[in-house]
Length: 551
Image (cartoon, rainbow, N blue to C red):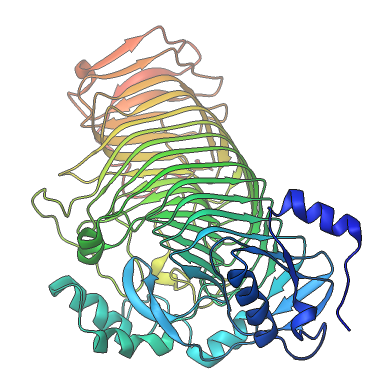
């Protein structure tokens, strides 16, 4: 006998899930007691909706076991509150996609499809899988170490990375060597538009949780993604996609929470599709790697991004903008505002020196399309408390940075690293209150502005900057000056301006520069009377390691 739905459910469906008929998977033979797989029943319901020109496939309360769910256009997949849909680890059919910035052939997603229009995944039900089962079946990453660069997916993956640098794309045979070691995304939409993902609660993931690839006009809101501590089980990945709105989410993931990507190295430059026009707001992030990430796959460029009202607790990083030589592309027109970060590793990192597993450091090279460009980035209204200064991936032994040799040598709350041949241009950081193990360090920037930034660090200087032109420090301070460390140390920063800043009681030296450089620094309207020395010229190399307070 066919299951029937209360009239209020049908009415709700008409308004909340879109117009069209409703297809209950129980009517197609699904088992809601988990006693047998419901893969064919769910597929039959979806095909019936497709034949009808669209509609809602409804999964009512109960426990379901299923294989991959392939979506179609003009479809709403609604997982009702009280429903749990479980996906066992299994070898899956292959399809084309992209993995860590490289176009690949790999397993189909657990939920998703390609070339779709008007597709939604909604409801307050649970979708779940076990990352440990997937890594036992297909293998997991190995971290970088002193003995080698590690690998995300094994030696065939590292070889593919080398091959696509020589010629891209490669023959299918090379991609198929890697395919058995790639784990599927949980949800992936590819070459699709008009997408809604709303309300879903995900527990566990094989790989990335939600992946939008080559897609446009998408909304992700009010989702809960709990995948910590699975290998590479990051939250939301916007990959060479545009016009995306993310809001109201809770993210507790085994990698980065919200990540914007646009292809990697030669393969990404060949594809050359940007991520652009993205907003992120009203979201809470807990544990895992970084909170908001741009890169490191920047080859197609990432631009026009606005992030606001995000709370981050216990992650290894906060804001992480990254690329490296050879990757190319630009990161530009970025605004990040109103973030609270507590007990994070490094709160802000903006670096053009990032390395992924399987990669080795690149040497300096002439500026070309392979050179990443960072410009016009504004970060404001940050409250940072108890920043640990570095990442500790002890919770994830397969992490890219778990090896002792990968730990950064300096504890830093804010780290800015530009290239000598392509400095970070037009970066403004303003209205920041920060406490942490280390301070702010920056090099190779052009037009860096720090405005109303208070940095209370346990090791100093609080502000350490070198090789930066057109530098403006306006209203910078520390309320916890350290004996033996200046508040500000500048090296090779000609024509820097320091204005409106204050030395608090206990300050030894406020501003320190290298011998002969003080005449190139402009001081305006500072209140430095509480400092034992307002300025000094000293040959001390503060870049060897952060200076701990004197005992």
